[in-house]
Structures are given as structure tokens and as C-alpha cells.
Image 1 (cartoon, rainbow, N blue to C red):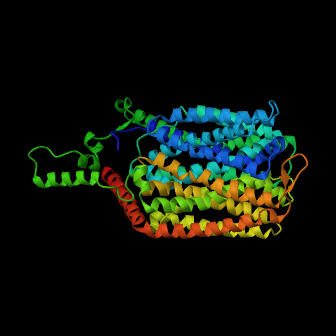
Image 2: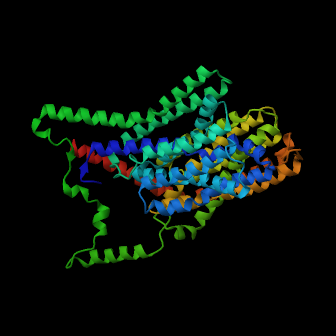
Length: 563
């Protein structure tokens, strides 16, 4: 709690959050491989296993996100953005040159390196955004995670639909967008996103209203993209109008800091007109004594001559510092990895995101095997419904945590069951099953991502959160390798026939049926692990709920005493 309550600081915090939202809108480039994978396969004459291993190389870039995790505690947010944008510019720029045929196809290992760089670029952006925003909005981690991860889910649809509208699905133009647009957005975000003091409990109500507006803006964008996808082929003029409308809608979250600025400006003018002597100081000052929280007082050692009971309490607190932290307290990565809860969360996360990534990476080949000529709609549908899963799960899990102390892993367990149903539908290969499957997988993958982010912070604290988060997302390359690179690649190649120009192809439901069955079983394993974690963490969430209620009642009492 600061000594000075400044509307300018509050506006700056929300302006930073809006910049974070815009960064997330362009940082889901790791999920767009299906949009240009077929071009790489034909240009380089790859088998499906070789193509899938290229996608694994892209996801291996996430493993190097550990570097971003280490750096997040040592480097400013702007430097993290700079590293991520430059890496993406090089990684996707090299792929653009190959697909555009400006240079001959590079050796396979070099393409793996550039794909890895492109995949790693988003870890720097995501780490900068998540760590900073979770610290700025400590009391609303669920909504913050849901909103930020929701916009990541939309980013694939944003890129796909803009490319379809402006460049008629040209893969070279798509890769050029992936190289340039994130670098430009990160350059803007560098100036606005930084850590600021956390708001007081009394401000939680206004924060919830602002989050509600940003959620509403996101839903409008998602519906807008969905309508465009379902409308079918559009003419050039309609496509240009759609693109302009999308850019206008993406500026919608900026209404929040603009409203805060206008409200502060109006209050300052009102004070100036009513009392000229106060006009020189439009900021509200509080007594210096109020800035010292109970926690800070307890941290200071007792002075000499004080009561022995006080000294005993200090010595007891010192012993607590030296002991291993309890669940819910700040953990280093080593301390977190010594807990069974960490590995239960890790493996259940693998079952959800690993299988989901397999569908996203292979959506192009799945669509072609099922007889669809244009698979971009499935890529976009997975992205849009993934957004709904992320944005809704973040708010719903926060609501039930506050009202009934429902552990967040319960929502992960529900998503695993629904995802298993989706894979079963895709394995059956009924008419329209790919539409149903892309929707279900998108929603469940979104829930898994959005709920795991605040869960990790609640179990292991925020102090070393950047590194812990990046260790958890090692599941992305690991899951991609196990389920996509090995499972899907080997089974597809076993079912496929060789083509004269090199490579192979497979047509029919049998190409991926066994893959879907195995992934459905993996989701059932993930369901069991999530339920185990929920039962073990019930007491932690009861304490979190009690803490939130006490803060809220304390904030109301302070407001009442001032009035």
C-alpha cells in the first residue's frame, strides 16, 4: 500500500494491461503451423513424420522459455519484449524467405533451428506479460489469466482471418505477418507495461468492472471473427472492410485507461473549481503511518529492551523463514519440484496440452485426410473456441473460488473429460465430426491453459513465478514430441502411400483414428490426476477464499470510516 494514491499511476497500470492484451493478440503464432505446413511439406519433399518433427522443433522453442523465466527476475519488461520480437523476426523471416522461394529450401536442421527460434520468441512475450500483470493485479489472478490467455487464443484466428482477407491465404504473406507484426506491437508495449503498486482492497470492485468491459470487448471480437469464418468466401471490398473493423475492435480495451483518465481529470477540475487552494495538489494524500502494513511491521525486529514475548515471536518467525515453505507460500523452482503436487500438475497438464497441440499442429493434414480442401476454417475455429474456453474459465473459476472455495483443478478435470469425448467423436469420423472436434478441443485446451496459470501461482507463490511457469510449459515441446512427433507421425506414415515427387499422403478416417483413441485415453488419465490435485488442495483454496473475504470486508470498513 503506497503513501500516495495517484490516478496517473492507476491509469498507467491499466494502459500497461491494454498493451499486454495487444501483445497477447499477436503472441499465439506458435499455434499457426497448420496454415503453412503444407507449403513446407511440398517445397521440402517431407514425409509426415519429418513434417511433424518440424512442428516439434517449433514447440521445443518453448523449452528455452526457461531463459525467459530466469531473465524475468533480472531484466526489465522492455528488454524481454525486445529479445522476443527480434527472435521472432529472424525465425519467421527465414521461413518466409523459403516459402516465398526467395532462397532455395534450407537444410532440414537449419529449418528446425529457425522454427525453434520462432517458437521461443513467444515465450519472452508471454513471460513479460504474465509475470508483470499477475503482480500488478494480485487479487484478480483468475480474470487476468483468463483475459490474457483468451486473447492468445484469438491471435491465431486474428492472423488467419487477416491473411485470408488481405492475401487470400497465401502462406508466404502469412509468414511475413508473423515476422513483422509482433515486432511492431512489442515496440509499442515496451513504453507502457511495467510493474506498478498493487491496488487497495477497496479498488477490487472497480477492477472487476474494468475486467468486465475488456471481457466484453474480447467476446465481441470473437463473435465478429466467427461470423466472418462462417460467412464463407467474401469479395475484396468486404474483406477490406472486415480488416478495418477488426482493427477498430482490437482498440476497444483502450476505453478503460481513457475512462480512468477522464474521471481523474473531471475530479481534478471539480476540486479546482470548488477550492482554489487545493488546485495545486490534485492527488489524494494519506497519513504516512497508513503506508506501513501489518506485514511490514511484523517483519521489523523488536528493539532492545522490548518484551521477551515479542522477541520470542520474532525468533519463531525467523525459524519459519528457514523451514521449507508450505503450499501457497513462495517456492523456488527446486522447492516446487520436491513436492508431489507439482508433478501431478505437470503430468495432468501434459495430458491436456500435449494432445491439444497434436490436433492444432496436424489440423491441416487431418482436414485433407477427411476430404476438406480448405482447412483454414478449422484452424480459426479452434482458435476462437479456445478463446471462449480461456476467457470463461478464468472468470468462472475465480467466481466459484470466492463463493465456495472450489479448487481450480476441478475445472481442469472437467475439461479433460470433455476433451476425451471430442477425440472419440473425431475417431468415429461421423459427418461434421471435424467441426465438432475442433470446437471441443479448442474450448478444453483454452480451459487447461487459462486455469493452470493462476493455479501454479496459488500453489507456489508469485516470487519465482516466471521460472515455475516456464518449467510447466515444457509440456508443450514434450507433449508435441510424444503425441504429435512420434504418435501421430508414425501412425500417419504407416497408413500413408508414397507420392512420386517425394513425401507421402493419406486419405480417409483411418489415417488418425488410432491417434484419437490413444489421446482420449490420455485425457482420462489427466482427469484422474486433476481430481487428485483438487482433493489435496481443498484446504489451500479454503484459506484463499477466507483471505479474499477478510480483505474485502477490511476495505469496506476503511471506506466507511472515511465517509
